[in-house]
Length: 188
Image 1 (cartoon, rainbow, N blue to C red):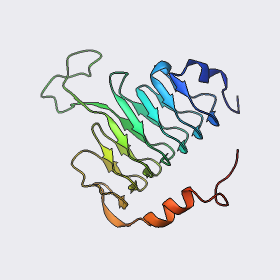
Image 2 (cartoon, rainbow, N blue to C red; image 1 turned 90 degrees about the vertical axis):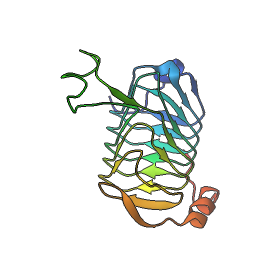
Image 3 (cartoon, rainbow, N blue to C red; image 1 turned 90 degrees about the horizontal axis):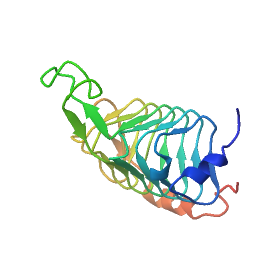
Image 4 (tube, helix red, strand yellow; image 1 turned 60 degrees about the vertical axis):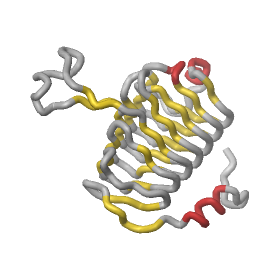
């Protein structure tokens, strides 16, 4: 079904105004999801972790936000997550040092950590983000990048690649100015 799912909003922990949730968005723990105002979550998104979202946020389709309800992804105001990106608050060790299988079948070692997007930050399409990552204020990460805790992300920087490297400075003054410019903002 195409369109927006109004019914799911009743199951969420909290939901602001002007929120659009696509049909086929799956929440495994909807009571652990808290959405601010002006939030859009596109169809075919999977959310298996606790989630706290600020205002003016878009999560594009085919995004995975995983890690179980013991962990949380926090997304500040004016943030975005591009198509097909995957953020994991838990990742298993596949080196073989701790066992042959994943946690479902055995007691494999798991790396865990919450993920945070500070205000005005975001990631482009098909970015992989691992446990414990903090995306600083205004920082953006380019398509097909891989981000883990040892990456040196900086506020208002644009980072790209695998591993991510600094690409250029983001225009902080313009981003903040446009976020409050009524002639720039669309009404839905």
